[in-house]
Every structure is written in structure tokens, then in C-alpha cells.
Image (tube, rainbow over all chains, first blue to last red; front, side):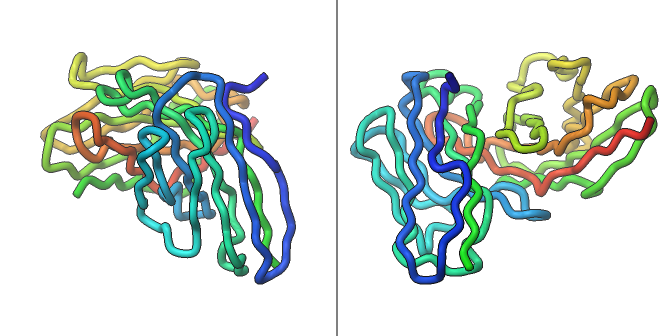
Length: 116
Length: 115
């Protein structure tokens, strides 16, 4: 089983619908992240969380919200999806102690979202 | 603020040829630098990282990168390309040292390997 699991892996939805992407991890890491990947733009940080009570906006948080339900779970919501939110979304984790030194991230396999 | 620039969105090499993927960084503090690889339909995985120890860093699958402060570069190389190296490669820099560091990614370079 993957250490960082994202569901769903693929989703097609319509403009205006509410969408939730879920991420769970078995690595025991404190930090969790949501990134968005668009062709030619690389990865951009949406939100990150350093522990259950800590949520921070990233570079492109508008139109998104997150919930850290437990140390192992971090979900991303699109309250009213729009077509330019069509992208590949990645959840990632890092460990507080090693992460504070190296910043290494461990990624899920991605959730491909299409908004029509 | 930290940033990375990857020169060339697409690089094509022949099997057995040298692979060179370029990354330049901007950082106001000594950086931590990373190369990640993304194979088709997969997430990113770490190839190698520079954390201020040796300037020549060896990673997985025969890749290595050299940190050159004077050139603000961290180019990725492999002496002999394999077909299995075809993937997208991302350079990244840690935005600050210490506990608040997040990774800033470049836009990626897609590597194609011709038979």
C-alpha cells in the first residue's frame, strides 16, 4: 500500500459543484501539503499544515479550502468548482524533524480533476 | 524570495548520450536544493538533494548534480541515458532554512530518450 494515498484518482465534475479531494498518510509525518500541477507551470502550493491545529495558505489558495481532520488526513475542497481549476492535484507529506533540515517531500500519486 | 529556473521545458537525447538538465536558483540564504522525477501517471519522487555537505551529490538511477554557488546552479547530469529515464524532472529550492521551509518548484523539464 502507498504511504500517501489520494482519493479519488480521477474525477470529472461540472462548474459550480462542490468537490473534495482526500489524502491520508501512514508515514507518521506532521506536515501535509496540497499542490496543484499544470502543464508548463510546475507545482504550486495551495495550502499546507504543520499539525492538526495549524493551517496555512500557500501561493494559490483562492477558491480552495482545506481541513486537517487528524494527523494522517488532510482534505482539499473546492466549494464551487470552475474550469480553470482543472489540474492534477498532489498531496505531500514531510517529517517535522527531517523536514526542518532538508524539506524533503513525499508525494501521493495525484488526483486528476476535470471541471467542465 | 527563493526561486528556481529550469532552462528548457523539453530535452531530447539519444539512448547512451549524456543527460544534462539545467537549474539555476535564486536565494538570499544558503539554499537546500532538490531534484525530483515524475514518471508518467505517478507522483514525484526524490532523485537527490543538496544540504550544504558535499557539493557533488549522487542520487538514484545514476544521476548526480553539482552545487555551484558562484554560478547559482544545480544542474542534473547522467553520463548515459536509458529509455527508462524518460520522465519529467523538477528542480526545487527550500524557501527558508529551519522549520518553516517549504519547497519552491521549477516549471519542470520533460526528458525524452530516443532509441
